[in-house]
Image (cartoon, rainbow, N blue to C red; front, side):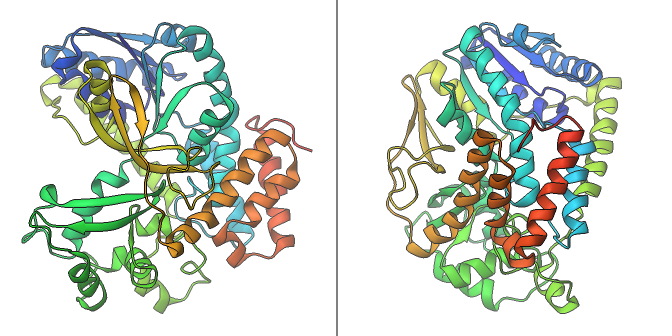
Length: 443
């Protein structure tokens, strides 16, 4: 069995997912094929994964490849964590140009001007991936961790034969985070709760949550979220999600920082009182990226110079558990992003990429049917699905007009800029990306 990791230069994430595989004895002997276009970062990840394998008496053979095709040859599972364009120049561009037009963002990797441009520069690379996979490992499962999750996974499932599923961290951490933030974690064991979540990536809805005795926790959760004392450690940093829960009835899976830019209600012109209420960190993501890059470099250097510091315990990431389930046939249920072609969520569009329960076992990946979402929740999701689908259309037509329409129908962008401003912003973003070689010709 071969597990190929694309984007292995993401050393810390690579360590988490592949370390999990190494600590899974049920996988037996297998190969790890690391690939990255950055030779220095590839070598760092190679040395780290090899050290983990040796420390924990793993049965993996760790290989590294600058050539992607060599890494993919014969792969059974592909874990993808590439970021096309990186922090520089592309993330910087995604923030700098919109800010010039008065559009402020928080993360810019899932929707909005930043997310749409990230999708458009990544899809051509995914197309190359798909062509290689069709030739070299057509039966491999593609576990995608790259954002924007819905657009990229949706592209693969709609336009290629790759057996892809999108994976995110937000679902499994949703209930523990909510209970901890409301100080309910002392009286309720999050591990024993029963909950139901589905929707779209980064905006799936916690539809129900009960404790181990079957008691509905939502009334207590909503009361504490609305009436409990607000501090920096509790309440303020989750204020957007609490507001969405108050007005739409349900808590969402992804952070307030993310969801503030998926909706039209929270990011307005700077107002100290409004900022104090919602604590939305505007335009700080590029700085955070710089800090993360420095932190990753420092951590990698520290681990590689002192192997005794290298430790790993199995994380909550889905990757190794999905591979184990398919390899052994022992079922594992997780939440993944898949196309809604079978109406898995009946009141969302069939062409949408939805995040729902999926069973992994000897039969592969089997998405599960869900009930219709509450209408208000489905309506909020559709405001995000529309620009996602228009982005995929723009990739097909190669028309600037379709990029403009996708961005113009983004809820946050539409709440801040006029249509002429959006058109000029899109032209500036396209020009910068095309000039840098990150986008093909659009007319």
